[in-house]
Image (cartoon, rainbow, N blue to C red):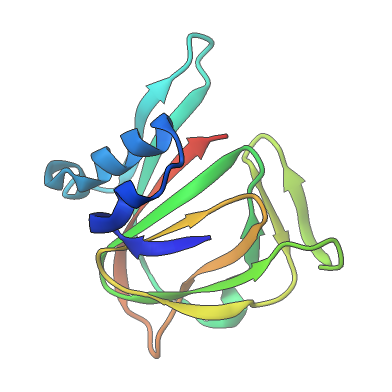
Length: 154
């Protein structure tokens, strides 16, 4: 997991696809887009190699924010409005499965909350397959947020 601001994104040598994602996130025209799904890079076979989901929602209670994980994609989550917390813990074999991994949607859920980490405006998280995370937690009360989640094919 990486937590930082876009000003420091170039400090992380994560590869060309991550560089492209960070460049896209730095463009104010893109962060102003409405909620939706935006394909940024696609393979010849139609596989989305890099895409962004722009979301707006109300933050939730911790019990309504299960720990999730991904295997095929890394997340770059950028908060553009509001504040929330993300529960975090390393994904280990001893965590009880809440919902088995679904390869079609690249998501699985495990029981637990993780340690809450504040997620403030203009901060990003990079979350890898070993990072169980529970986004959308209210801090301290429910608030409206706008978030961009860029999915980077690994």
